[in-house]
Amino acid sequence: MIHVMKVNLKAYTRELISLPCNLCGGVEVTPFCHSEKYGLPLKAVMCKNCGVMFINPRPTDDKYAELNKADYRRAAIGTDSGLNHIFNKQYQHAEKTMIPLIREQIKLPVKSLLDIGCCNGGTMAAWMKYYPKIVTHGVEPVIRVAEDATRRTGSQIFQGLFEDFVTDKKFDLIICAQTLNHTLDPKGNLLKIKSMLSPKGLLFLSLYDAVSTVLNRPINQMVEIMHPFMFNDESVRYLLAKTGFEIVSIKSPRFDGKKMKAGDIRRIMTARILVLARPELTQPGIAPQPVTSEILKRLRHNQEFYQRWAPRIEAWRHPNIWRRIYRKINI
Ligand SMILES: [Zn+2]
Image (cartoon, rainbow, N blue to C red; front, side, top):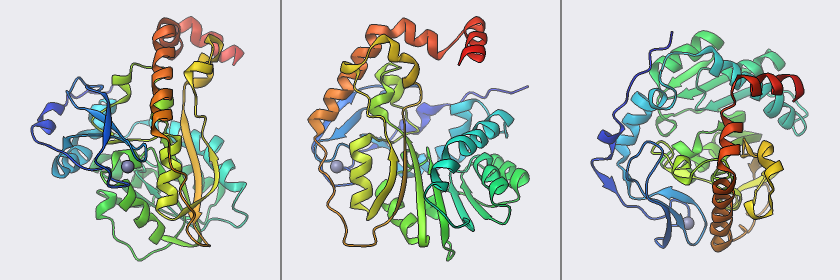
């Protein structure tokens, strides 16, 4: 029985700070939403220069640290105890998607792995199955979840924020899955990740594509306090290039609602950007400059698509029992 705990998120928003764009330092922004998923009156903006999307003004760094350590899992999923279904979901995602994608690129066995934001260890457990000798490390801010990850995997877990994680170890693979958007300094954290990679080490980065996500939900359900940053195809490429990463492979759907039909509803459910990247071996590449007016246009098209097909999309996202059975048999 899960005891769902109510979290007072409003307490985190009493003091807000305005900041320039984390990636390019730009101060010119376009606001695109004025409230968020939990009803808090936070504003989301897009940097006019590089297309990074962020909450601005946002709660202070101290309040975010407190939120991530104390209340994040409880607010997002109702509990901070280790849940089997979340562990299994992570395990399956790693087994079906992440590991095959990475094994295409890495010929040698991965000897060491760091999972930033490892939750209760499902991803690490999957890697341990394929590479029994692998040494796995994790970073997880929530105490009970970190303890659960240790119990399930025997990995070395640092309980705290990645910003406070210090090590002289180097890793063959660093996984940052659905985590970078929770941190307050994506640019600084990518530079830190780069410094922790072994000479042939790779970064696996997974992020929700915020622009595509609004195909299947109202825009203020995409924005949420726990995600101070939101990424899109263009800004991810720009961010990686600017922090000295070279993209080895990328899966990024870059949906545009203007070109989509009702029949596409099924394939837009998980708009994830999956990237495998390595520190640039040659001269730093020139970052492709995002055209932010195009990103905003796509954001609008996608939201219009949602508004047009909302009842069908919601029925697909929240299936009743008959639809679930149908899908199990047919899909
Ligand atoms: Zn910017």
